[in-house]
Image 1 (tube, rainbow, N blue to C red):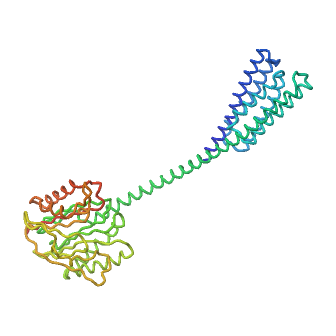
Image 2 (tube, rainbow, N blue to C red):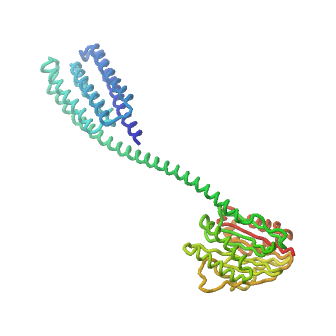
Image 3 (cartoon, rainbow, N blue to C red):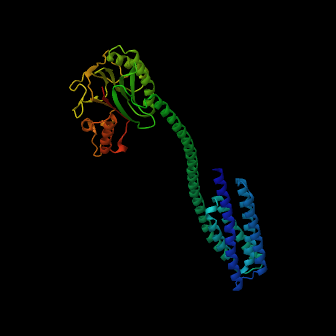
Length: 460
């Protein structure tokens, strides 16, 4: 801002100098024409001498302004005083030498002051205008009464008096114009300062954003490292899954549990909310569920869910988050099933069979989400039989909540139909068909949640 202010002061002083030269050239052209027409007795040599003095003095001022690195208020005042002194001195000599047409000086003084209108303050304008009027009056009196020049003092006094209101008006207009310029300049300076602050803030924001992106990548890498990358193999099940986080980190998590190198269960969970806060909860919730599922393998699954809920409740009691989920425990041809406020597990019986929700018509087994105080109510597990080529499907609610291209939710009916219409084949073939139908119906930009789908086909 100091640089801009210094540039403004320099430009203002230079404009005053340029206007002096311009005004002086006009006045001298008029003087030469008057001499050529025989209207004044002023000698050509005097015109040349005055021109040399004015031009040389003004060029010195211009050079000093260019050489001065910092234009201080004191320096600007000195330049103005020296310029004014040069102007008034040369004006005195010029008006006296005009002789018969001394009154011409008033016209050019008025023109000169008008040129300086936007570059002088009220005091400066009054000083120049009143100084010019006083010099005009003094020179006229001296020229007529002591210099034996022709003219009527009373007539010229009348003209001088007539010009004074114009000089005063110019000074007032100059003050008003400069005041408005000052307001505009202050506004421009304020905008420049704001822009500078915004630039600094933007750089800082970019730096912080870059650091956040790095942190998010690290968080994503850490979270991904604790999630299963491949489905279980040779476990009596053909399993495929798809996992699409909305951002780098996810509030969905899933897991597979083993006992004696056999698949003993699997789960899917969905933490409320999105982004970092949900992802942080998955970081401690997933290993906690794994530990309790493993250590409590002899306990009913409902009791396992109670212990999970108590542990999670202690950890997230100060947050507004909760966790929905499904836990499955495999026992030969039976599956023990716990639902903690999560969308129902879907079952397709055999090849080309019907698709139903687990335990259709029963809702008492569906407990509250995890992390919510249960008031002594335990989770209820249900057990159902599973046979060779039966298919089970676990999913997060994103797939049924996403609006289709007409604005309607994709919904449970379409999901069940896509599972029912899926071709007989591997779990990957079935998963690809289901996700293909889903993406045909929706706009990808409308997906606003993490999406996880697990397809498991019984092979034994």
